[in-house]
Image (cartoon, rainbow, N blue to C red):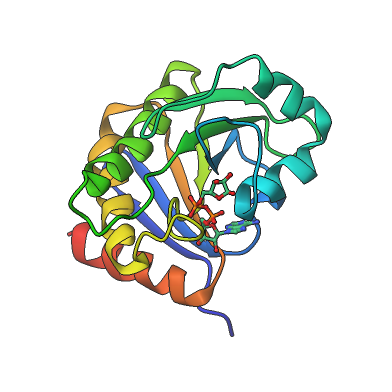
Length: 181
Ligand code: AR6
């Protein structure tokens, strides 16, 4: 039997950890780990643009890019998710250039935008831990800790960490078990 999904009740809502492809999730918003152009790329960004179709890129062209740590919202087009919240994670440069603060800002700003749009269910990938090289074992507690801190303050009530591998999911579960007590 699979260890996943893993579901936990926390102050302000519920947190779920799944292993899979975020483009298949029928939530109010999926978060995209984009770059500052917002014009597509590889990894989860490429997968989201492929699944959403060319209308997503057309809307992204109107947004004027996005700074690292900030977030912008579009419709989801052909995705099962209603919206995409695009955020730009930091490139890992050894940890001395504000990478941890910027990664936390991605999660916090994505949740604030979801709150402003009255969205209840949102799914995050493990931002920055692929092409941008953020060590996954450092990223998971920042992701989980920021979500736990924000959840009581926002209308968002269900957060899914959509991990691409069981190893990534395990890191998120360990962080959740440690930080949610
Ligand atoms: N569903 C869920 N997670 C995924 C998927 C998917 N379909 N595909 C990959 N991941 P990355 P970054 C995981 O590289 O590090 C792009 O070119 C992946 O295993 O997608 O923030 C952008 O345009 C990893 O755990 O994003 C930027 O230029 C996590 O998603 C740059 O990459 C993030 O990996 C952003 O790099």
